[in-house]
Amino acid sequence: MFGGTAAAQAPTTDDLQRQISELEKQVATLQSKQRHQSQQNADATAIVDRMLEDSQRRSQFLAATGLLAGYDQGFFIKSDDDAFLVRPGLQTQFRYVGSYVNGTGGTDDNTESGFEIRRMRLRFDGNVFTKDLTYSFVWDVSRTDGVTSLLDSWVAYHFAPQWNLKIGQFKESVFHEKDVPFTNQLAVERSLVDAVLGGNNTDRVQGVSLIYGGGTDDDVRAEVAATDGANSNNASFQDTPAGNFGFAGRFEYKVSGNWS
View 1 (cartoon, helix red, strand yellow):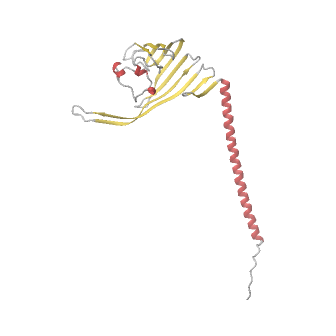
View 2: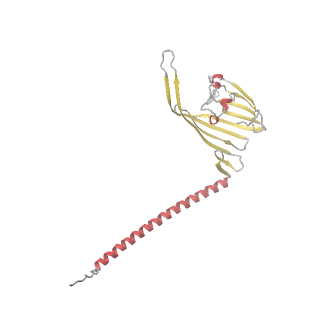
């Protein structure tokens, strides 16, 4: 019985050359990927460095100009001596409303419902030159046509302890319900009491107001105002349809608790 094995054929020079070429291609591919990754890392490092430089430059600018910025019950920018302060703010109220009116006199019942942006306001509050000279500027967006109009524009000066003088366009302080901002209301909307008592003339007025008390340690708060008349907001000095002058006042005594 005879047997044997065949010896493996030795690779030729061409085979070895092809293997070397394949290895060279793989090495070149790896080197290319490594260079690309290194470039990406360098780009990322450069971006981070630029951001840090920009942040440091801005910080140095704020420090050099004596400006401070941050968040304390809202965003603010102010001087380091508190003489200048601005608090930008955005207030909005989005809601779903349903209305049902029972038909009378042979008319059909009427049901309406849908979403609406009830209020959208942009405001800037703060003080200038001194903490005793405060201001408030508020713009309101109409919920029916989106038109923006000036709502509040006043400046107040704290000229003596417990005394303030306010001029500009502001709320006429008569009914407490109207004095409460919509952001502090407990219900979705105010009642119609102030509108009925005020003959539906409860919009802003232009004039001057003298305010007493209302501080943390005060039990009394009072305000009297001389104005151009009811609903005289965003109007010239000429007489408005609601009248050519007006006076308003309110007195409050706090039995306990805090003013809010």
